[in-house]
Image (tube, rainbow over all chains, first blue to last red; front, side):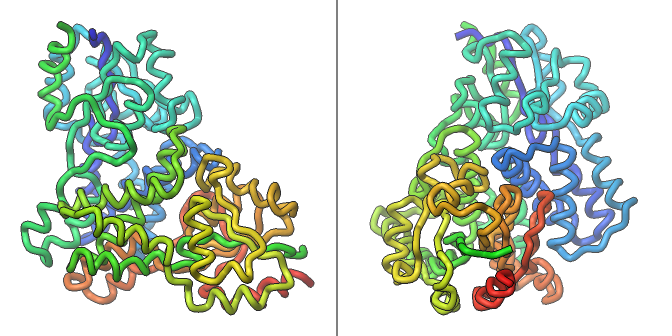
Length: 248
Length: 248
């Protein structure tokens, strides 16, 4: 098998969605951690639920609605300025520190993003982070009006880049995304990072439970959806060697 | 508007999914609460993800797979007997105490369940709890090989019972289910009960955060999916009067 194209999930894989925590903590002191985690869990839920209901709205709507849900569920009052400042951070998420180096080392392959993000959100994010200089394409599921892990979303890779699934390596830190890509027929590398659910629990338990329990809950865990990624990595810096090895 | 048919969600609405906590606590002392909550969250996620992936397997598979995920994510070892005892409880969930009285008081209407449960799980549950004596039908989404909140699932009510959506009152405690039913065009009553997410947080935070914060996190919260239920109730015992009032 030759990997000609490397396609990345964006949120949680190249960009650290946890990096909104400074802004949420600034707006709601003491609640930054729990807002960040509940927000991410609900943001994903809303993409799946709207897709299944046949009521697609783009990712900016899911992102706003899930933040509203989160603040209301925590009983927090907010004004429009504070809300706008938090949402704005989603266009300026931190790149993971190893992202730019890893992508630059694979410039002999076609490099792209396939993301649930709306075209407007993704274009701003890619430009603000400088990834526009190394990426060949930024693909939004918005063209299909349905979110990952629908196979219609993953089909965009071949449709836009004109490469068959067997020649694509797809990278995601999101277990459900890795399973969806595998079910579709892509080669998949899963980056084991801590999930928002685990972070949410850790936020609340750090002072109550013994370290061993906390460690256990903090473990990442592949989803049980009947699919396994082809590769498990812990950092984007492992990718260039992995891709080269697949080529031989 | 005349309500001729009252249709209930099963899990969390008529049957208390929290009632597995005794069995999980017995199998894993100290972890009963957190297992129960994480299991429920992942069980729902797996129904949505499998539906969206086009990889439907029935609810018994989602229920088993999500329990496996939960135990692994908590780093808990288990044997087949302990696993089987926990799963078996799903066929013997406790009825909410007000369920049988409320349903019996509406016997002049057609009464049914529409549930994500597999036919085998639902038939056992309805028989074991005695609801087979008051229900006219138990409808499983399995006939459509897709889970709620897909509109295909809610369409089963008319197809099986031969009543148009305008004459149906649908009752669910699950916010996403209430939104899905409303988006489809049913009349909807939402029972405000505590969500598994809130319970999961409460399990872990009860000894750390002040009571006010805990109360805030424990609040139920309607989802922000662009739909609102027609009625909000706190107990099934409010239903007979609500249904009668709609008839006039």
